[in-house]
Picture (cartoon, rainbow, N blue to C red):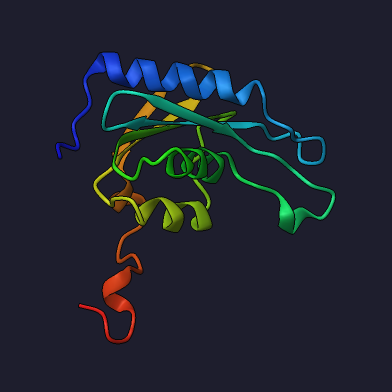
Amino acid sequence: MSSKLSDRRIEQLALAAVDACGRAYAPYSKFEVGAAILLEDGQVMAGCNVENASYGLSLCAERAAAAAAVSAGHRKWRGVAIASVGGVPPCGACRQFLAEFGLNTPIILVNLIDGARTVCNLSELLPRSFNAADLPGQV
């Protein structure tokens, strides 16, 4: 699987992440995030952050999108876009969660302030990731 995305795909994913961001439920932090995952078959699955008064129960946009993709039977992805004010990268938990499905996945960070897009691979955001080979008895 190639880790390179066309400009058209980057734009498609970025717009889907921005759209998902508009559906975020963030009454406590006021920090809305949207994520979109490009599946191997060209479909796009989106998710947004959903906060809870008990902060630890909140769900990040990246994990919401990933759960939607896996629930629909998709485990191979071509790219992930994340939209937020400032175009911030995913939190550590989301980086590890996304790594389960491919460290070479292109990540597009979309800044809602100026529309800027930064593209990198997940492996750049999560060097020396924990994976199945680190588990006892795994190869």
